[in-house]
Amino acid sequence: MLSILTRRPAHTCWSESPRRTRGHIDAETLQEILHRYRAIGQWNAGRQVFDLARQLFLSIVPIAAEMLDRARALLDDYPTLMAQYALHAAVSMHEGFDAICSF
Image (cartoon, rainbow, N blue to C red; front, side, top):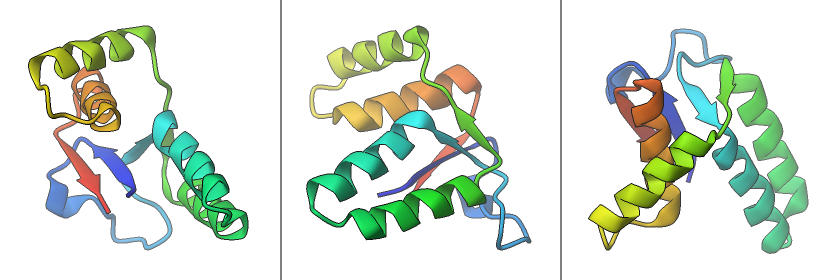
């Protein structure tokens, strides 16, 4: 799954240009691409996915301590929420994004 963090409604995540998005990607998503594809023995595909993500997104949002603290609080409040989704939500809340698009 690829998460796109955006300040635009979910249905407008993609710009008119197929080469770049108006959205942002967080560092955790890129790390997850590296981890997942290496773990399943598909590094060649993972390298391509990572490189494509780096080409597509205008900016990479770094993960700050405040975002991690908010993710922890979200996990306390929502017992069935998965940690990676809590972090994506926390990043969105911290940065003022309106939507998370996952593919």
